[in-house]
Structures are given as structure tokens and as C-alpha cells.
Length: 442
Image (cartoon, rainbow, N blue to C red; front, side, top):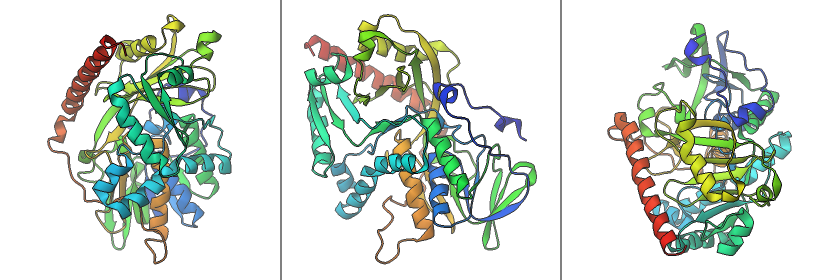
């Protein structure tokens, strides 16, 4: 086995509290299948599960272990939205195509929670909604417009003024916001492991610690080379490696920026001040350029996440910005003790849209969750499976996600500088806006 891929699951709150994973032994012999899925995060596991439900033979190869990437390290928020609002999507894609995409994305949280129910996935699901909040009163009009765009499509939304937000969140730091009633939260690694087990029970072969070193067309099939020269021959291939995409498919890694998202988790909180924070079980995030997202877990820990520097963190000082933010939001808690700190990479696309590419016959590339991984990638996997098994048949709904040509990000080799400059610039703008809001009495 290549020692580069023998790493255990990185330490995190989720790794410490998730149910044990089912066995995924490394590929040890050459096999054949209908569809090979490369990558066992949400996209890959959802694709495999839905293909198996349709009677398709599926093999999944994962370089480390299922859920090792951002699927096992994110904030656990199930948000059925894209970065673009519905009206923006209509302008980008045209009304017909946009509404098809909006409908599927809007139902993506329904899909997640239905899979949890159907397969009995033990992942602490809570569906109490998502709060998007603003410190600055000047930004509330934009949030109100966003909530109205979803409301006219039948989404349960609620507008919250400063006092209502304070009651819901337990802090007076915010000027207002809105509640998206479709959303919720889960233990994200437990959810990934539940998808894995559900797929395995339907006959999907999943092999961890099985990096693919080569993929080539041989006759009418695709042949992937795995550990020790063992191969998988397949009619079709889905590459779903997202923020951990490597050079397996030429140019694919250069189509996204792999940015770090950092997280911290306190020890379980006690007392009245702790009970007043998100008492309804909602998840929350800010509308800053560099958003912060926070929630409580099933044991009462307070979690905070946000962007960090490009390099992987090496110690507690790398997380000080998140801990400072929590202290400012909830001063009544006093000094906080932190139990876990961790990070994972998300894939950011230039247009902030999920990307689906079909660069060769029988090959589908899917990546670019842009921080919406749980709901979006589960939906994306379902729709890719439908496309592979049924296609856009007459009388059926067309594939809702845009299928586009691969386009490399210019000067991609400088991505760490892109990200570092963006974090520094947006952080400065957010600080200036927050200062103006405080001076104005916000």
C-alpha cells in the first residue's frame, strides 16, 4: 500500500463521536463492473447508492477511507441552496433551466432526511431550520429579497428582526436575518458512514486505501489501476473527488480552488447562558463575505467554522480567529474551553456553481460544492445516477445540473496566493463594515 494513503481519519469532533465505519478493504484483485466511482464522499456514495437501487453494478475506490475528506470534516449544516439566489439563476441559465435546478436544489434537504429515515442512519439529525444573519442593517434588504425569492416558491421562511434574532440565537450582535425552514443539521461523518453502509447492503463494493494511479480507455471500457497494479474495468466512470481532486484526469484539479474551512468545538456547555444559545436547534451562519457558521451538537458543544489560511493548520494558534469570534458573539459564556480543532478542504469554482463535465464517452466528472456539500452533493449523486441509468428520456425530467466544458482557472498554480489575498481583503472589508455598524449603534 502506498504509505501516502494509509493515514487514519484526521482527529475531529466527528471522528471522535461517529459510529464505527463498516469494513472497506483495499482492492486486492482485478475486477469488472458497470460503473466505477472514484471518491467516497457524499457525491460518490450517493451516486453509488442510487445506481445500486436501479440495479447497476457499482465499485467505489477511495484513496483513504470513506468520508476522509470534507464529507467527514464539515460543519454538519444541511442547507438546500446554492450560492446564487433563484433570480440570479434565472438570469444565468434562463427561466426553464433555472427553475428545474432550483426545484432539485430546494428538495435536496428533503432527500438527505429521507435517506436518513429510510436507511436508519444514526447521525443525530435535527431539522429546525437555518438562520442567515447580518450584523449590518444595510445588508438586511438583500437578505429580505433572498427570503422572498424562496417564499414565492413555497419554502417555509420567516423574517426575523433584531429582537427575534436575539431570542433565537442568544446574542444581540445581529441586526436581523431570515430562517429557512427546509434546513437542518447532522453529524456529517456519521451521515457519510450511513450512506456507505446503505450502499454496501445493496451490493456496492467499496474499497478504501485504494488510490487510482491511472485511468485509460481500453477497447470499449475504462480501466482504472489501483493498489499493487490491480485494475477495475468499467463501462462508465464517475470521478467525485471534490476538494481533494488530484491529477488523475488532466486539468480537472485546475478547475477549482481547494480552500480550507476551519472548525472549533467547545466542551459541552452548561447553565442558563448556554441553554439560551440556539435553543430551537437551528443552524446559523453570517452573511459576511467571509462567512462564519455555527451550531450546537447533540451533546451541547458550541461549534464555529469559517475560512482559514491555505496551509493545513498545525496547532491551536491557527484557530484563534474563530475562538475570538465566538467570544465576541457570546460574551456571557465567559472564557471557553475548546475540545476539538480541525479543518478540511472544500472545492470552490469560479462561478460558485457545481460543475458537471463529460469530457469523454462514459466519463462524468462532478465537483464544486462551494460549501454546500451535504445537501448539494447528495442531490448531485442522485441525479448523476439517474442520468447514467435513464438519461434524458422522453417524458422524463432533463438532468437539472448544467453540464459544461472544463475550464481551468488562469494561473491556478498561484491558488494559495488567490486564497490568502481573498481572505485578507474580505476580512478587512468585514471588519470595516462591523466597525461602522457599531459606531452607528448597530
